[in-house]
Image 1 (cartoon, rainbow, N blue to C red):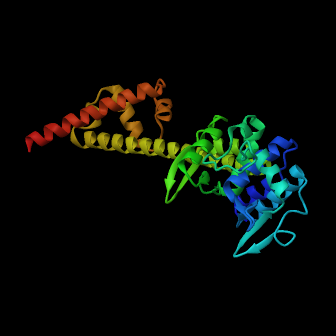
Image 2: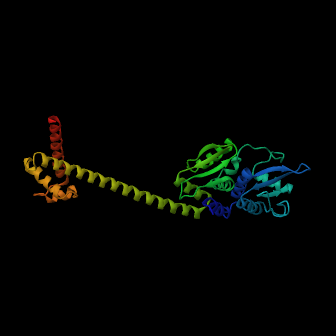
Image 3: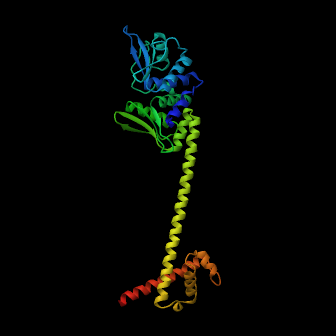
Length: 319
């Protein structure tokens, strides 16, 4: 099972104890997967349709727990699978009215009203209700990438206005959600790992949250080790290149004018560098009499490098 699938499976089992939160989550499912239809007699009824079995099971559970609806659910007594889609229908008129009334989809004369918004703001006034609504929205239209690959959380909306309302909901938890158009849909997404962890916690997917955190910690440790290794490798390369250049300069001076022509302190460090070509500056300093620190050794070797450059310049002029 994919990471996204395991998150949805966990969220399917997460039921808010408060009725207003259950209504908020059911409102999300209705907004993304539901519609109001009418019978031949013109009576409204509710239809929930989705390809995700977890969504339909959650919808069924919420209808039972929140509205005590059982017998009036379904076409053929229960849910059916048709053309690779699961369908739940609530045919009872009173039950339909109760659900729509709770979700604020009814006019004053108890008639269904068209709503371009994702959800009535009254449904998601409380933090707990916003969390429940976000859980329902993700179940219906969300996905999350495998954290081993990269971090990406998204929920697909049908219109820009709905996407913007969902974006505001997510941002109310101080999560930096963005909106992007993709084909004929609007996508609300989050790409930062720590903020995706925050969203999983808000929705109640605590097991998935811990799994993602474990992956994040492992990736950060690997990145830290890689950075350290790269840094050490760069320092080693720099030291080796400097030692090679110093040895070449000293050999050039020896073959050109002889090391004995150098001042005593430079001749001493030059001969020690030739004898210990792989030694560090600190180690070279320990071989001197008296011992000299790294900065002192570096200063002497730089003077030798300058002398070598002058000799090379004079040689080129003579040629």
